[in-house]
Amino acid sequence: AVVSTQTTGLRAVTDMYQSIKSRAIMNCTLYQKLFLKAVLGVFRRRGVEEAVFKEVYEVFSSLCQFQGLFSPPCSAVLSLAVDLGASRILLTEQGPPSLHTHIRLNCSQDDVVFALKESLTQ
Image (tube, rainbow, N blue to C red):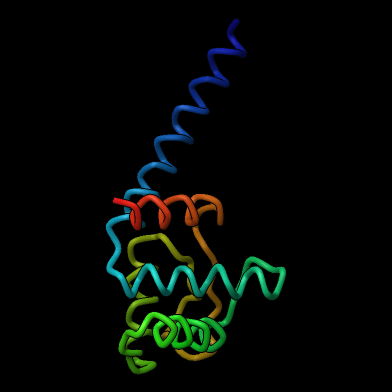
């Protein structure tokens, strides 16, 4: 019974933490959400849960064009990545951001997919 209570408590804390991340993703701007979609696309294409900003930027630009949106300049998109890192949705390398900055998610890909789906249907 003690183990079950501990497991349930740990699960509740994990769920609470993930729901905070999900809500943060749902509250992102349209361009931040597109950037996260681009990150997921690069992860899936490479088969590794780490990407270089330059690759993500190329996919992001394609997503913008596909959706008929203005594709912001690289510096503006780099700023999006910095903002997502500051909110702890993304993990980025220390130091000044650049085209070669490595990017990882600070939550599971499934959590990002779920949050993006939920935010688009509301």
